Image (tube, rainbow, N blue to C red; front, side):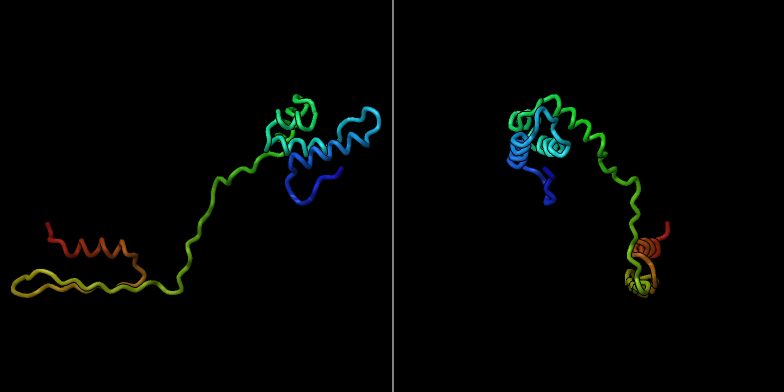
Length: 135
């Protein structure tokens, strides 16, 4: 009774496998590991009680097999550190800011800032510091 390579086992498929094995077994042969593996997979989805009843296996044996399977296959641990790389720009960004404001000594004040490679937050901070009146 090899397991299907196509994916998860349903309760109906597992039940059919168990019945086929029971029809062909000789004497009191123990349940093969492949059948137990399919029973464990079904029990994870359908529950131990329903699976043990439908497959006609001992509840405690199925529960122990489930515990052993979860110890044997540890869950993937999420990484402790993930490095995120920012995309590299081909050329630094360019920015021109022109500010026009109040009059000083009869003339209108103007300020022009030309920068390459500066962030928007840096430009905003610089503009505020240059434009605000000195205290």
